[in-house]
Image (tube, rainbow, N blue to C red; front, side):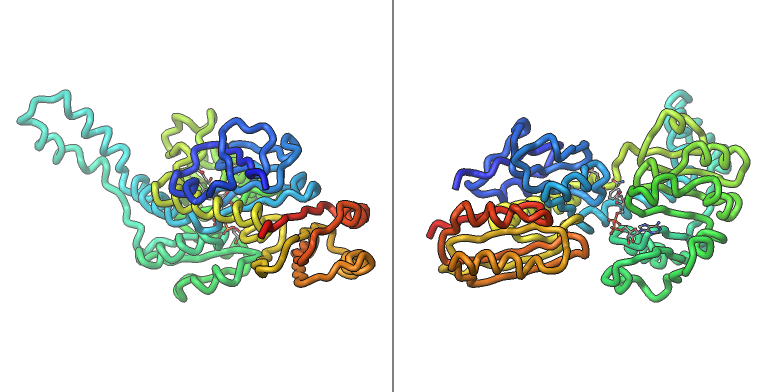
Length: 394
Ligand SMILES: NC(=O)c1ccc[n+]([C@@H]2O[C@H](COP(=O)([O-])OP(=O)(O)OC[C@H]3O[C@@H](n4cnc5c(N)ncnc54)[C@H](O)[C@@H]3O)[C@@H](O)[C@H]2O)c1
Ligand SMILES: O=C(O)CC[C@@H](O)C(=O)O
């Protein structure tokens, strides 16, 4: 087999890239890749004719044309949890920076460079009352979105002696099992945010969450609360935030997504999309994304896809051909595929099928070569999105 061509978009940590063996050629400017490794840059999967898969080294996939990818049988991966510690590790310090007026205190200290050395200590004691803050212990934290980040943040709040509430309309059970018992899961959004001093949003950017934090959302919050957005900029309606800051409904807004409207506002603290920017997180994401992509390209196996079901099977020694069939999940597809193979006297040594409710994914192993016409016959069905054969030269 010729090498798989990988296009690397954005900086992907070396500790991940080195996992790619000689079967892969990685470059920043490949125009017709089989696989793409990306972080936050936009990817239109229709731009790449031979594309089989995109691996997002990170959580959010709003920068990738997932719907188009699904229609073309292109698998999209992300790396759940790989950068969650990094985000939580930043949100709590940022709450402290706000609640304790640290950013104002730091710039005050810098201004002391201008005065005489023997007056510095006296000036510090004279002026420090202006930067007195409030503690987070005892305050109520509402976490919206109890996923990989939300659960860690909620538990972190408990460890900081906060009263913690969490809301998620469709949580993943495995995440909920990791919540500390002291976290109160609410049935409604209002129950979570109604009396919270701090509301932190950790949901993906999808159609339903775009502009989710709007005037109505903010009106349901406790007056004078702090709003935090380390999820995505467009989840929050910035005009609504600015109005609420002016009226006192919100005391402050902390976000990872600077915009012209927010920059320079004295009740807004901004970081430059730094949530996942730690050495550990970048390495975790890169390792995970590379493993997912390589396993898909070499074997058709799927772990952590956002548009295809998880499926994994190791080819037995005697297998020569692995046929992958990606189809719309309608009745009769398995019978359709096996009937065609059977009618050509092809013996199937292993057949594995998984569905995510809309896409069916089949891995069919055979101990012989399969003629191109047979694949074309399968591909001819209107519900077959894509076929692919992987040959194992033994
Ligand atoms: N600032 C950064 O650098 C950074 C880093 C990592 C992730 N993120 C963003 O944070 C998001 C969450 O990351 P994660 O790893 O926790 O993802 P996740 O998929 O583990 O969790 C997201 C959770 O949000 C829930 N959810 C969806 N719609 C909701 C709604 N309307 N109300 C409440 N909950 C809702 C989902 O059910 C899920 O449990 C990502 O999609 C990404 O956009 C940003
Ligand atoms: O790659 C990054 O630096 C940010 C990643 C983050 O936004 C995510 O969604 O995981």
